[in-house]
Amino acid sequence: MTEHKHLKRRVRERMAKTGESYTAALRHLTGPRRPYHHHESALLRRLLGGAYSEALLLGLGGGVGFMYFVFEYSGRPPILTVVAQAHPAPMIPLALSRLRIPFEVVQTGSPRVAERNLREALAAGPVVCRVGRYQLPWRPDLPFPDPVDVAVTAIEGDRVTLDDDGPRELPLADFMAAWSRVRKERHTLIRITGGPEGEPDVAGAIADTAAKLTGPVLGNAFDVNFGLSGMRKLAAQIPSWDRRWEDLAVPLRRLHECLEVEYTTPGATRPLYADFLAEVGRPDGLYRAAGEQWSRVAAAALATAPLGEIARLVGHAVQLEERAVAELAGVS
Image 1: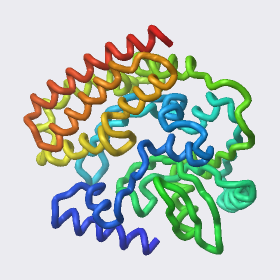
Image 2: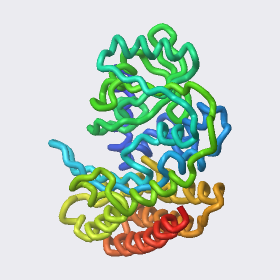
Image 3: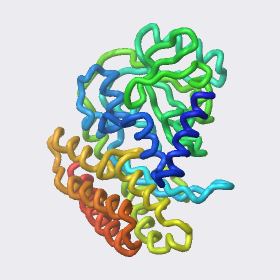
Image 4: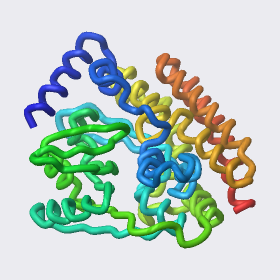
């Protein structure tokens, strides 16, 4: 835990000196954090020995999505969050299911049983564990109880070796704390138990992506923040951000990061999803165009362009998304 605090203190000190975001400051201190294209699909591709492309795994795992929220916590400024990939269903179990690859999900409330389960599972090879994203020392220090999948590859003594966009190592006690952080996902472990038992369910994956972009995701009042509805809400609210934030550079940097880095790949995940569509023989041009437009939004946000201009760019992205989703639904 001391190592966590030391790294995060150094990141905050650099942020104060340079005005960089947490992610940018962290990169300067530790090197590139994301050497792969997309977190979950790259992680699964490595676990499966490179047998499938990242694009295919992304598409089968849910593909693209959209979630827009502004979270508010006591003592902190509002935190803008956009998730551009499929959300909130975990992508790796979905991708494995649609690949027809058998797997086992194990979960327990007991840390002692969880550690035993983990050690036993590792005897057969690496496993996926869902941990608290912001309890990992190389990730930003934010108050969200937000899960992220990592692959645990070994436990030696009191050290855990894992794969989180590259090899990492941390004390067993710190890993267990992160693994216990997200209440609903506490001590979740995914173990692949066999090889593919049929052809991938491409049509089902595409239909599900289209449905979640156009219809309910959670089945409650928060659905207004998801899919096309969430995109329209973002476009409508941007012009009033100057009444919500004293320093517009903060949410605008965050918007750039969410569209290009966090929970995504550049272009709000749309170019990689277009690669998936091309790989499975479906039209991909509209999603490539949408990706280029979201990157324009991100660039304008990073340049602190006028809010009206950014809202206009988002509005154009929404128009492209509407056409892309209609095409997706029509060919699924």
